[in-house]
Length: 330
Image (cartoon, rainbow, N blue to C red; front, side, top):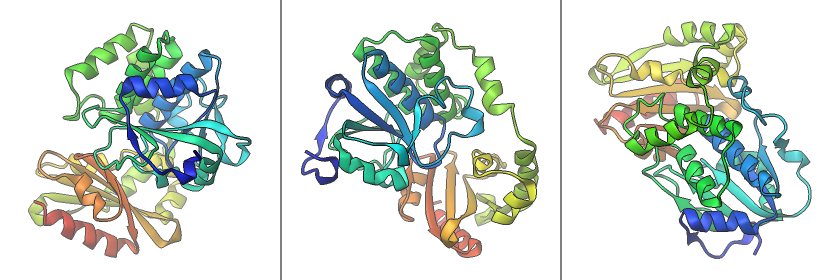
């Protein structure tokens, strides 16, 4: 059955996902557009693991790996631009991809993949794969990937463990989000026992800022607005800001947390100008508002406390729309 012509969707568990990987000889791991630490870390770890089992496997993406994740072994050697992918493949595997469209321009490759496996923890994931292993209780797909490698009987090396730790560290906001469970910490501890140095990983990701990002942060914070009696905060990033500071799209990652960090704010919003007159919306909440539900109203999705979507521009129009939608949920 070709991936582009699926007629059924099957729910599997970790054992079922492992069985699909065992039976596949050629596997592609698709990263979502604008890949983050969870997407990159979990994909790298599983790709490296199945290669150790003698399989042909590559990570495929539309966008390059952000600079801050290039300390991970394999960020260059295990990745292949989607345009260069040739031939037929047994399995297309999505890790941390909330919907199929998030693989962007790489989607046509799926017609050359016999089947698809969707592994995710986003509550808005609709189960778009032919096979779907969804665990909404997992704090990061890195947790699921760790369980998957155990199920496969793969012995974790330091490089796999470092990729999984990166996945978990970034998607839990440095273990600060309410999605973190005792299991999260147990897995992290097991990864440290494989040789991961947590201080070294933290320095690479959080203490290695480019000059452009710091300058962009200054301009971005200057756009801060409070709405709904101080319960909603918005900040903006324009194309002009990126050009003026020399920052990249990757430098925008995480800036939305500054909006949520303001005292009294329940919902933090970052609005960024993107191509085609669109506005990318990043949403964060503290405890009351389900921003995944909010994002779905704009065609997006994510988690209850962290989500995103894309809306029609200009910025002022998108800001008004998302603030009104958020205020209705307070």
